[in-house]
Image 1: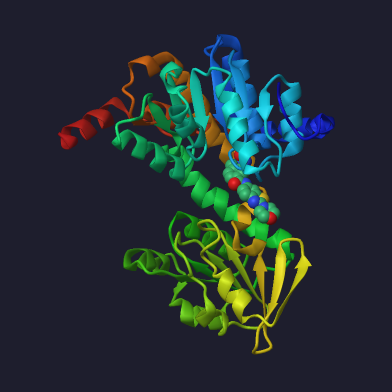
Image 2: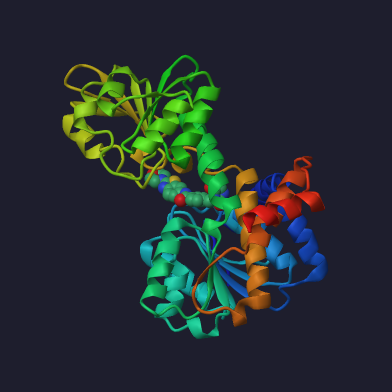
Length: 412
Ligand code: 9W4
């Protein structure tokens, strides 16, 4: 029996799902093909994913393909209760509500394993690990994993020699991580800052700490909105790339004195701490788009501040001993998830299309794959890109036979 917060929210959830689907053309094409070909007829899938409108489009696509889908949340705080209610009405076995306890969270995952799945779909590794710990693994044909963290955990199962079924790492598909990190996080980080503050970006000094994929996306979008963008880095090669992309590069101790808005995207801790905060201008705004909540030292802010106030939702003011005020968005947690809605549907379209096609691949080939971590097959990755281009009305060239021959000759 599905378990959601309030079945009465289903109508609102259905509208959200409809809106997401309208912006997920690739997954829609796949769903249509699935409904004709029914490649997942009789397949039971236990999925542990963030219960969002985009995940709903994926779950319904799998159902169109003939699968029975059991779904639990992959974070106790990320469930959209209206979406969960709508999915329950659509015949998905959902066990998810926002604010569930840690015990309820684990019970929900186990409930989906009790559906006796052929396939697991994971976001963070929890269901894959539990399937192995609780003796469900032997009946499972294969699994997929959506994130870097999950891939690392599953690789460590493989290294210890205890992984019992093949897992496809959707995270490492080109059409997933390139687009998630740069364009998804880039846009949704700006979105989170705007929702939390409603400030104007144009003309501001915008400091981006870290010039990996996320930093690059954030810097690009901040510049596009008219900010003067400064990048800080510790890696000389990345710093050079930022400089040649036209950004101003300097150490955080210098940037701290200039910035109006600071976004961290380094994957490391204490990137902004007391020594920087004490240099900042009155009104400086801090946000984190990197890992967990460690990049901005909230501890330092709390220790330094004479007082603090909640100014708006997700915006806290700290009054410093020097009389200046600095503002922290979403307690230093991921600004794009807490203050906005994560990646836009158009970006999830690609990662979830990889998921759907990876499941189809596992159903066909999984029994002959060794119990290892496997990349998404290149044809699937390219198919997703091709369908996305087509949905955007973009055509590309194809190699002539002479060009193919020429390439082969010099490649040897
Ligand atoms: N969401 C999340 C996590 C924690 C959290 C304290 C109030 C990730 C990927 C996708 O992790 C996700 N904590 C919150 S809100 C919140 C939200 N708090 C903490 O105070 C609120 C998450 C994948 N994804 C997209 O990006 C878009 N559609 C998707 O499925 C979703 C959610």
